[in-house]
Image 1 (cartoon, rainbow, N blue to C red):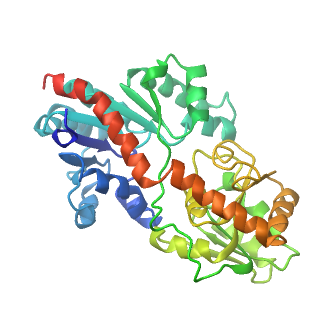
Image 2: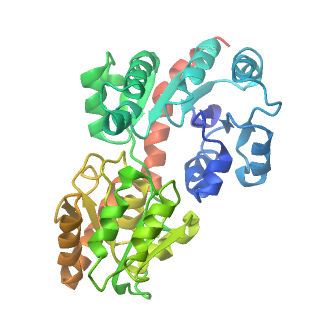
Length: 380
């Protein structure tokens, strides 16, 4: 079936309305893939679980159509409205997709009601996240294990961003391997690009990360203490006050920039001699990929998610999560301009080869074509 006969409906992450993307500076980046898919498909629709305020973003969505809970219905009624009434008006053939696992519990029944194939995408595994934070036997972790076990086998296709996630799912759940697809996060390599006319500032470090405990930013700040380096941290989160106090000990050499729009992030990265992501764990970190696309020399901790991106001493450096290990890795780059340049060139090459927007668009469309037979034969 030609792609331009297909319509894609994306269920946004339940609990994350469009305004959250906007407030964290991520609105443009998250929409880019779907703005390009509009040009290849018959249409793209987004289903938000937010209220009528979501309609304020219609001008920015352009040709992307939007469904939202404009009447502020209770969740149960909104879900019934989508399944039994609104979805019946969607054009066919139709493919349903989720942005993350939360929301799949609604998207899957809607897809089954329409007889349409459903793609469940996970940028990271919620069960793994909660096991790392609360323990494998915690109520949160067990709840997500149960949800994943119930939802993953129902999907016509599962999309994960890394092979590590695929292998974890295959080991845990009764999922058919042929239904799993690896589609990494993408980078707009025409925006996130080196700029030889603006060389980085010597001794300057930057990171872009939410101010959350698992981002390990306090240890990064401690790694900078007692050095002449400067550090910019872009991001917002619950540790703002605590990290501000930690930064104050560095005498103005550490700045917390708050939320930085994604359009301004390339310039922030190009100004830094080294980009560091010190997390305790990750899914498939977009900010690290964007820094690599900018040709930055990158340091990342040797943890799940980051080691899927960085090949040690080939396109970046891996290190431990403690301040001393971070300081040592950063110093090895600060002291060696040739190594910084070599790793930066290799980092950009990795992104161009594996995670450019064009490549991810091709992978997405190949999956839609694979499912198009199911979509065309569905009985609406």
